[in-house]
Length: 238
Image 1 (cartoon, rainbow, N blue to C red):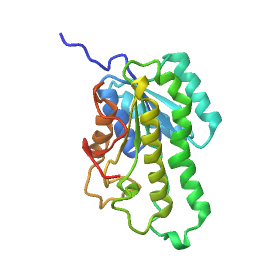
Image 2: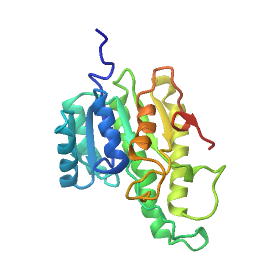
Image 3: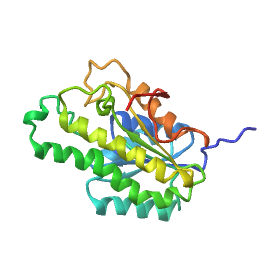
Image 4: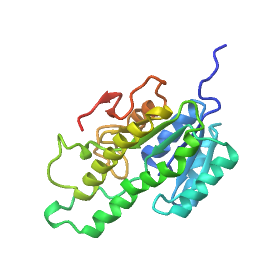
């Protein structure tokens, strides 16, 4: 009988009480991961986890705000005490698709707010959890990015969101190089335009499709790519 390679693996997903984050959590748990579902609102996180547990999945809800170091430290302590390691970190939490703004007139306090969650938040998470990822034999970091952060295709509009995702992609490249010797694979993934609260109902891709793109990077083989930018397993231009 073939054993499940993810049976004893632990994955943590930020911004996971709804949308892509919730579906990523579901798909990882279905593969056998012990899935830590992180949500800024504790009650919403518990409700989301309950919906997955009812399907027999092993999901642990944790209150986590990626803009608060104390909150991140508390989550790290829980993971360390309960599991002693982390195998997959999915930095999914993101805010402010500011389609109403233009760079020339953008409110910089909105830009700063986007950076705190979309860039500094994942950076804080990586710094906090890399010691636990080093204890895994198959560690993966997945930064949920966006083609809005691609310099190749970038135009005007959504400045706070776009520039914060460019910076997240830069963080991916740096960490991938720094962690290569530790065999920790680090990649950015664009789920595409997905029908979520942020994407809107007119989006052409389902939540399941967007999440599958992220899960692909979270479950890469040991000889898989690192320092890349992908959608559906195919490279995107930086």
